Length: 343
Ligand SMILES: N[C@@H](CCC(=O)N[C@@H](CS)C(=O)NCC(=O)O)C(=O)O
Image (cartoon, rainbow, N blue to C red; front, side, top):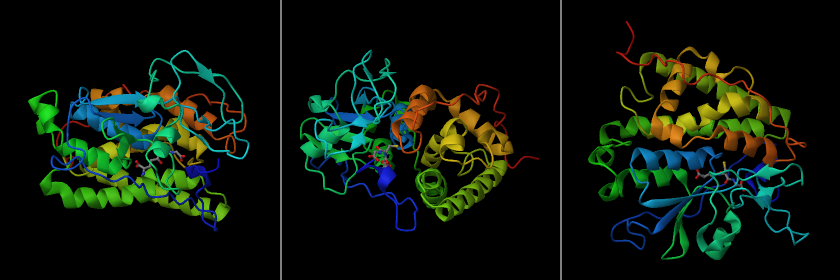
């Protein structure tokens, strides 16, 4: 798992995610102005960070602005011809074609959601990073936005990509309502920033700290932090419909990507098994409500999610067995309508 996030652990065995390095904006007067038919959003439908961006793309009606390119869910060796280069990562595979996982296990067919081509005819996400001279410490991550005119990555940090989509492309939204939707409203910014800050460390990245820890101490600490945070979230959602009150914001998009993967993947794979999300009184209805929003559902694919995690990291799951269930009924009534705090 050389040069992937799985290898990013400190001497004490704790997972430490590296910073993204492409951080440009889509300013009208800058080198990457908002334009139609120019930018490609490269995602994996398994990746919670990428699916933030895809969700906001749908919420803001930007389907005709960004071309979306989807990787195969399973990682593969990216330089199989070089015995000294053991890197494994995202690969573009035409629908119908199949690959084995990095250990040569399995036979994973690309389904219809995988893209048949990628910018620059790249075979791997790594190729795009190398083409534009990414620094050595940069992991070959999704999401990224590729500029087909400048032939470079504009931004590969999901928290910034969603802000850019929220504000800079309104002239191209598919409807006035979608253009007017503000996921980061001025009046709530302080609250959103505060929630994002601790939700990132304790939940979004917190599940990875549990799953990628290589010592018992690091795992114990990560699990404790994660479940304390989930208790805090359950308590917030007992008093308000969304994280920042009765307005749906980017904080909800960001948190939900972790919650929707929790019961199906993280409980088993990252050993976050103190409790399932569907057992939380308030979080469970909230997860169903957001699942029932068409824009979030369109950005969610449980097959890609499960296949990616369980098959991509042989050091964590040698035989790439994908476990069953628990198949929570996300279409059940969510019961989140009405006034808060509840009487
Ligand atoms: N900070 C990045 C993190 C993105 C990230 O870690 N993506 C993972 C997929 S879930 C990835 O592409 N990993 C590839 C690797 O570690 O080599 C963001 O939020 O955009």
